[in-house]
Image (cartoon, rainbow, N blue to C red; front, side, top):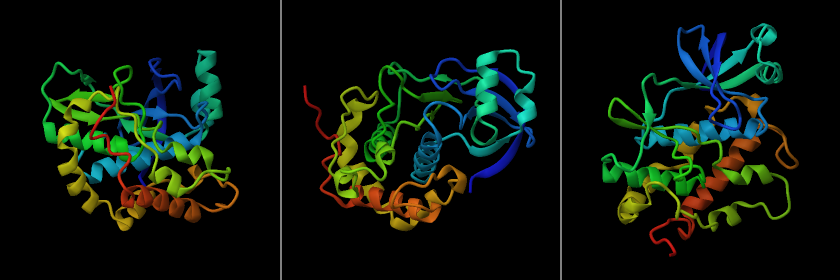
Length: 256
């Protein structure tokens, strides 16, 4: 599992996102952006953050260190902001922490980027169906002149349909990826080469290793998938099917 720490102090909310993440300090003396289990999107968002973030890390992309952070009820007890207090109270237990990168700022297309790295980011987003790297919400930080990827909770949309009619690995394998608004779509020319390179790295064992980083308690039972082990196997099945399919999802061309 990703490393486990305990929150010691809630510092301040970050009101840019709809889920109201916040800055916290932890007992490892680290400072983290906490993504709360009690936010409206639920635990599946935390799962997607870990799966896509840790997969990106294993593919050579920079992702801030992730941690599972236990939030004690005492931390929210005297919070003055009623909205924040409600969120802290609803999030007692295990939450997700993303290492805070002090002095980082949002990347924009006016800055030079390595074409191979850009294509790898685009490939990762297409493979995991991440809809949240657009002009409206880039989710790429520039820190020490390097790109860092954040906010992957909107990826892996298929797990929101676990147990429902029509949800299948085969359907996800053939689901196209709309990259028209992706901030790095201009680098799609390198995708065939990058696809060949990364596809060899994404093995079932690597995916299983990534899923092992997700805490059991975030893997909520659904009909047909009652245990964390079965849910992990389902994620591996869906992602393997997408990788082994006919690559409809690879955005080598974008419709006008």
